Structure formats: structure tokens, C-alpha cells
Image (cartoon, rainbow, N blue to C red; front, side, top):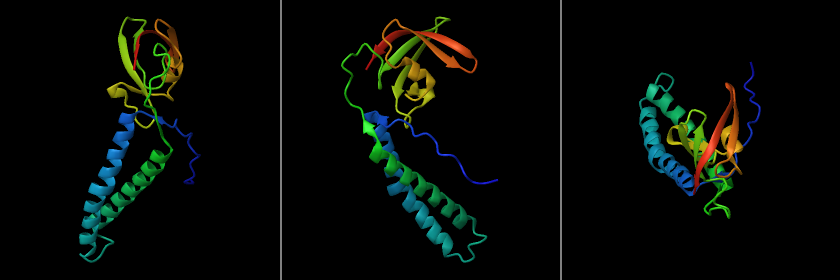
Length: 164
């Protein structure tokens, strides 16, 4: 079995100002706070002698690799992201950054905000613009019917509210 993984499709390069700030805070936390602590712990563990059986050293080095990998990713990603700060010319249409309230066939309301792939969080109501649901919403207006294809079958929603 090889370690080869086919390249993943890159997510959209758009992000909200809040999302960019969260990524910058994560980068700062990893690079300025967490990495120096782990580096010091690895240094202290290395002084204890035999590194092959030293758990603190082994796990510290592993954590350093994880931190460095994430820091590299965040630096590259932040360089290529485009922060969307302005509202669209037609605020009645659903575009990136919109807060959308939908009503399903059962009368239940669902509230989503369309954000970039780096900041989506379904539990917080943030929907990635690359998701099938968001792609079907983009360009729709108030009172439009939206059909979303899902593994369990097509679901129909009605746009009740759009705001930015």
C-alpha cells in the first residue's frame, strides 16, 4: 500500500474578515505561544539521555511536526486568500457572506451564513460556499424555491430572508 494521495481540489479563496482574523489568531497561538513551550519541553526531555525510550521527547517532536505543518499551511493559505468586505450591489440576492433563512417542506426554519471553506462550522450555522447546499443557494432571491440534492433524496427549501 503506497502513501500516495491524489491531490485534493483546492477550496475557494474567499474568506470573511472574521474568518481571516480567526486564522491569524490560530497562527499566532501556534507560532508564538504553543511552539516555544513544546520546543522547551523537547529540549528538557533531550537532556535526560536515551531519546529512543523517552516519551516526552518522542511526543514533543511529533507535536512540533504537527505545529510546523499547520503553520506552513496557514502561511500559504493566508497569502492566497481574498477577504470579502463589501456587500454586493444587489442585497436581495444570495452571495458570499449572506445570512440566509430557509424554510423546509415541514415548516422548520434553518439559518445559515455562507462563508469560505476555511471557516465553515455547521454547528455554528456557517455553511461553506463550496458545499452543494450553498452552491444551490447562490444567486437565489427572496421567496425562491431551492432544491438541494442529498444522498437521501432531493430536499426543497424556500428562501425566507436574506441579509448581510
